[in-house]
Image (cartoon, rainbow, N blue to C red; front, side, top):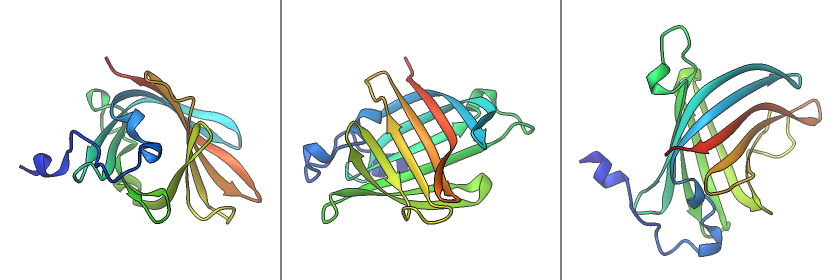
Length: 166
């Protein structure tokens, strides 16, 4: 079956322990998603986010859904998308691709640890560049921020308050 070929229960041993930066997210999460315009809160919705090891444990894939599947209706659909990440030993970093079909989005990032945070970035400090930051990471919660580089500054576009299900 497809899911048996995709999903892996264990991380691949070739990924150094210090670089297993996405391991804390494996599992199911409830979200509080907030959007910002010019620094002001513009919208807030619930969502869900699932992470799993894939591709013989060489990668991490997630699916985020806003609103959650149990609350979806045609008037309020926002996104049902996925990211696939894999460790690149020569860079000591993770390559990541986000696919958001409802908005026709495909974005590629390079992800690395930055202190206690994990930062995914497109081309730094070019107009329209993106930076996604995982912060305040514990076993039961984390915070995720989405920034865009506009007019010479990083502007917050979106953040997720994430709480582990169960």
